[in-house]
Length: 77
Image (cartoon, rainbow, N blue to C red; front, side, top):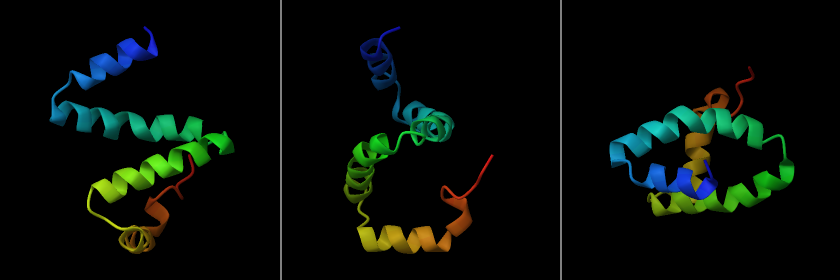
């Protein structure tokens, strides 16, 4: 399956299915992707855009991160 076919299949899902897909796949995808620090520099602006589109500003994100300290990326497997 190509990236385009995979993207098309995912975009055809309902909102609830997309949310479940994101929650179930993002942690594993992120672990592998974060091994490449240059990829993280590409991903960060996208993530920040998503957060801002969701109505949070960077200050609110930092407060949320501080409240959830160990639960945000600090867990090691």
